[in-house]
Image (tube, rainbow, N blue to C red; front, side, top):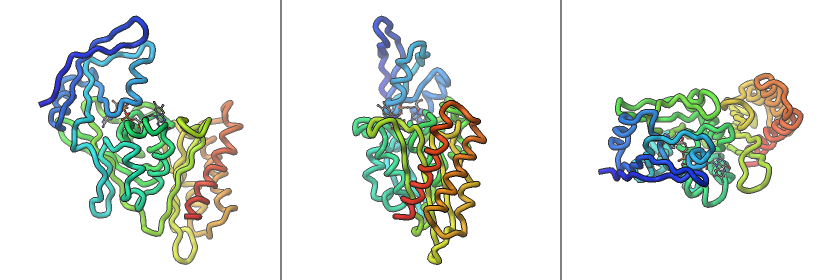
Length: 301
Ligand SMILES: Cc1cc2nc3c(=O)[nH]c(=O)nc-3n(C[C@H](O)[C@H](O)[C@H](O)COP(=O)(O)OP(=O)(O)OC[C@H]3O[C@@H](n4cnc5c(N)ncnc54)[C@H](O)[C@@H]3O)c2cc1C
């Protein structure tokens, strides 16, 4: 049975807002509540994004807040054959500590290590990071580089979506209000592939990304690049691999000059999509350098 409490949310100095608070213990209870309330409900996982959102002036208070943090089926990281599966409540600290991820997708551990502070990493979940869909979400570029899929569950059933096609625009995904993100799964990269995540913030800690890059580089025994994946963060309205830059690398011998060329191509593609803005003077050289550094880090690994 889920717990149902009528609670009070205090926002600002004078206003107090009422909402129903539910703490379901199973998927069935959670999806039943979501189907009952629809767009009038809001899911809370770690609450590190949602609570800030609800406290903004003029924010709409949901009729119900559904706390999914007690649903044990939503926790854990596991291997399923050739896949790695992260359940939605996996925290950034869980990711950092995971031997499975260190082995198969160390760029996720690198990205998790840059998120907020230890307190934020202990509460914030990978599911919340994806569903909030901020362009600076640090877990998304590595997961897109890994070709991840998301699994969503509602009372009507379960569906999957490629993560790269899941985002509509900043802060908007294609999830319906009655759906819960239950897991994220990706194929294990080849053992010979290496990966990296680099991020530039305004300071070294508790800092969101101004720009970031997730990269995976697979160099064959003949020392030529077999496959490369490059996904910048905070560079586009939604995330994408920059295949024009990846193709510069394939079939070539890794070198600093080659990585720099790929970086310049990413900058060029970024500008072709976003146009020139006040920040371009800064972002153009910086994204090129971050791409080079991310590829160098892969190569050094
Ligand atoms: C001080 C501070 C520093 C931060 N630094 C960073 C940073 O460096 N990098 C970064 O990427 N982020 C950062 N964040 C943002 C935040 O911590 C992360 O995005 C975190 O992963 C959100 O997870 P959560 O579980 O707290 O989400 P919540 O706040 O619980 O939820 C976020 C949104 O996702 C929805 N949601 C959550 N889980 C599900 C689910 N399973 N199914 C459907 N919908 C769901 C909620 O309804 C809500 O809309 C920071 C936040 C703070 C407060």
